Amino acid sequence: MRLTCLGTGSPESHPGRASSGYLLEVAGQRLLLDCGGGVVSRLIEAGLRPADIDQVFFSHLHSDHMMDFARLVHAHWDEGGQSDGRHLQVTGPAPIATITQRLVGAQGAFAFDLTARCELQGSKDVWVARGGQLPRPWPQPQIYEVEPGFILEGQGWRLTSCTVPHAQPHLICMAFRFDDSAGRSLVYSGDAALCPELEALAEGADLLLHWCYRHDEEAAPDFIRRMSPTPSEIGAMAKRIGVKHLALTHFRAAVDETEGLLQRMQSAGQAAFAGPVTMASDLLALDI
Ligand SMILES: [Zn+2]
Image 1 (cartoon, helix red, strand yellow):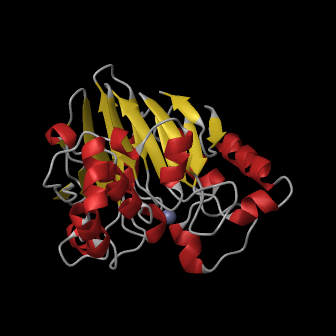
Image 2 (tube, rainbow, N blue to C red; image 1 turned 60 degrees about the vertical axis):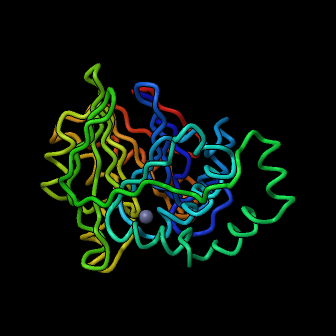
């Protein structure tokens, strides 16, 4: 398994970090975990194209985890991802089906564009020149709405999941665990408060990729303190459940703008955790 961090930032505009998104290559397949703003550009910088993605999994539907979804679906379609009957597989919580309809459905935001691309003679000529056939079908991503706790048996990997406290009751939020046939494992927390469900899911994981919105030096309102664990709190949890490698991500702009803060956050996590603590950055690849 190989994890490439495509977006390690937050919703804030940041010159060096896209919003959340991670490429997981496992058993010859390319899975995308979340698709926040800037993630598709990072995917291209990593040497892949949207049409190379087989499946997308959404931890939750905050904008910083799905802002590039429309671009991904459109480019996957326009660049031949649907040829040979292959369709982009999309798995996430409700209302991902409604969102997809409202983007690329018959009455969706992109319906005008899609009609033009399918009907205009010049567009049809370009499509045929690329090897496509007429009439040109619309994007048909395959949408699977799931609830936390769902299990998916992939080809050479297994996905398990759990609920995590974050933006309920407005959004369903979950964490994912991928185990491959070689016995290697990745857990992606999504955005998560500390909770027994995530501790059970992540027990013994080879890599725990955990969001880290807050640092140990800052005062924060009570809600944010409860919902946003610090590096030392995450490190202590990872130690408690026997994680082998901890990677922190989802950093705010201030983390990079404050002299030495990222390093101090790493040190705080490291002081609580015996294994390696990696501070994720865009395009960082980790072999698992
Ligand atoms: Zn987020």
